[in-house]
Image 1 (cartoon, one colour):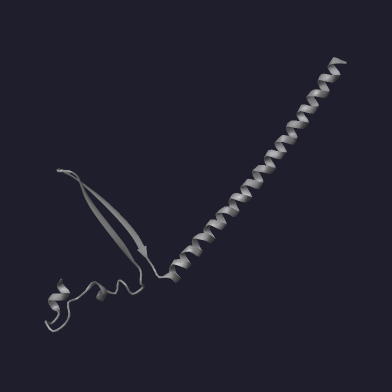
Image 2 (cartoon, rainbow, N blue to C red; image 1 turned 135 degrees about the vertical axis):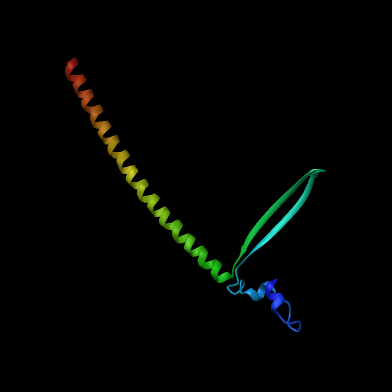
Length: 109
């Protein structure tokens, strides 16, 4: 409003685009829907969408994919480690069971 007051009448009205907020071609679309549920009850639904240039969107997706790939790699390493530990525990349990069976066999003989 202040900018419009400062401008001469011969100049166009100061618009949102004049602020430079769209220079990077990024913005949010907001969609608002209203519905009346009852005389004293109004429902409001607000949806937002981030609008970015295709090149920037591709770069963001690549960064997300790289982050997910790193997470998957860490999860896979953890899974392999856990599987080795489980296998070691199974081997120890089998050895203990064999030792117990040998003792029981000696005691009954």
